[in-house]
Image 1 (spheres, rainbow, N blue to C red):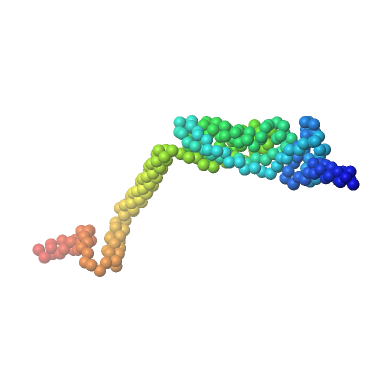
Image 2 (spheres, rainbow, N blue to C red):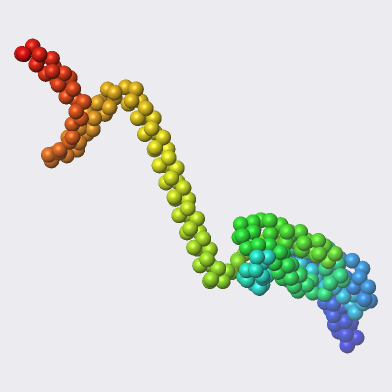
Amino acid sequence: MITTITGIILLLFFLASAIRVLKEYERGTIFRLGRVIGAKGPGLIILIPVVDKMVKVSLRLIAMDVEPQDVITRDNVSLKVNAVIYFRVMDPVKAIIEVEKYMYATSQLAQTTLRSVCGQAELDELLSEREKINTQLQEILDSQTDPWGIKVSTVEVKHIDLPKEMQRAMAKQAEAERERRAKVINAEGEFQAAGRLAEAATIMQEHPMALQLRYLQTVQEISAESNSTTVFPIPIDLFKPFLSLVDKKKPEQD
């Protein structure tokens, strides 16, 4: 009876030590007497107790936040930059045997690469060409983590923390740029208006009656908009026909 119970206990211990169940996104790197024999999973896996040892690796996409890094740009501006990287393990065997703690190694590599790439760029480039910086970071990290069986799919620069002095200087620069654009637009409007006035003057010079019609139209607009008395100068040209008639009658009277 005791022997049967002992056998049952040993069998249960063997099954508990030998049977492993891996999820769909997990793989197990199997070591047999210290030598890797490959990766298994997902599903049910049977190990040899004491002889086999398994290290589980997740194949899901990992989003890792890169801590803010102190960077001095190529134009000598001090700032802090942080980023986020997205990567996944493509070869679980390499991720275990080629590097110790691949998560930590990838994080440290991302920090140093972020400082290096941002230090080679100017401030305007960091602010206006984010896609270029992100692509450069992704290519460098992907090439360096490829021997570890890791694929870096995306790198995004999240935030660039500028000193307050630089923020004030950039605000002044933006304000000056807006004022310059406003003055240029105003000057262009004055130039176009002057051109139109010159064209109108040429037309009125060729057709004198156009000036008289414009004068009468202005008088009509003033009388329609205001009920108050308006003193409006009358050009002498309007009285020239009457003056000519008076001049003709004078010799007749003499």
